[in-house]
Image 1 (cartoon, one colour):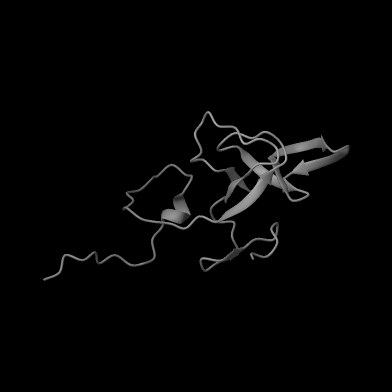
Image 2 (cartoon, helix red, strand yellow):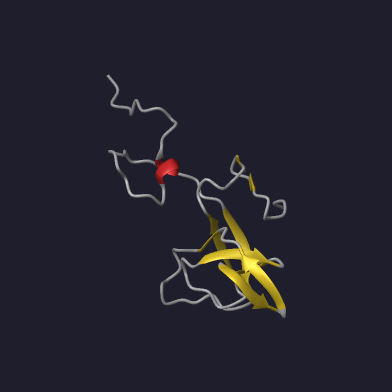
Length: 119
């Protein structure tokens, strides 16, 4: 008799990631979409960021960048696994971790309207 796990391959971890749990949950694994991106300004690990002119900026309401008033819509976070004392400096590249449940397609290759196609 096998001791193999009989749970369905479909689980709820991605549905509840980033939320307080209100029911029992079981161990799981998930995919998170990541995009290599260049910092447009100094950023901290786990900062909420969006993209403007191909670079990552801290998400915010309207602000001035390069003399233009823009809104930076939040798309994800600066790699939360970077050391907390490590700042990402302008021009450095890092992983932007896209928020859960925002990806429109996922097959180990993903797409999102705010990013160009993967190479």
